[in-house]
Amino acid sequence: GTDGVGTKLKLAFDLKRHDTVGIDLVAMSVNDVLVQGAEPLFFLDYFACGKLDVDTAADVIKGIAKGCEYAGCALIGGETAEMPGMYPEGEYDLAGFAVGAVEKSAVITGRDIVPGDVVLGLASSGAHSNGYSLVRRIIARAQPDLDAPFDGDKSLADAIMAPTRIYVKPMLALMAALPVKGMAHITGGGLTENVPRVLPEAVKAVIEKSAWQRPKLFQWLQSEGNVAESEMHRVFNCGIGMVVVVARENAAEALRLLNEAGEKALEIGRIESRLDGEAQTIVV
Image (cartoon, rainbow, N blue to C red):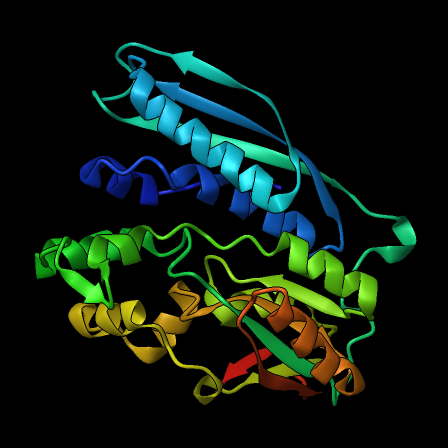
């Protein structure tokens, strides 16, 4: 999986917070590799700037190293490019890719998903790395005090910049313990566009939004940005960062294992048969 951090970087520049975007960068790649049933093996990064600010670069690279540690993969070098005139002062670009391995017979494609299967959701840590063009527009419009307490002892800036959760270790343990039929990493496109990727034509996922508490950040974004409900589910993860499909008889055990491993995992929906022309994922 190859990825960048998108417009979340712009906020990192504005807020001068460079310690978590590296985690975001790794997370976007390793979570994408993971959903195919693969174990991320190594990660390579590319950091480009106009003039190298050593402290900023060190913060970013530290985050990348931390992300690799969470994912259990090796950081094998990386490229740091100085390109005067290409980037405004204090700004940089970040990209990277992860390589993972899985036995051909163990690749997870979703082909065994049938009506009656259960949809589990793993909590996200925030907006992860998606919807940040809209987040920035809402901040510009609402002009909030980003440093004021927002959610417990977290400021709004903390909530907005919280790094993407890395699901690799708990999910690899789950796959070793029981048959996981399908996984979807909830990125741009939200639940409605990411879950269908793993579903066979003949089925749909019905997800109940009442099954989990929507984090305060998304409530704030929706009210301040006047964002329609359908748009919320298309742009943001709304609190669910990873979706896992298992057979009904494995659901309780899967939830137990995930929660013991430190994830907030819940049953959020079910698989039903799908009529021609019906959407493949419905949030009700």
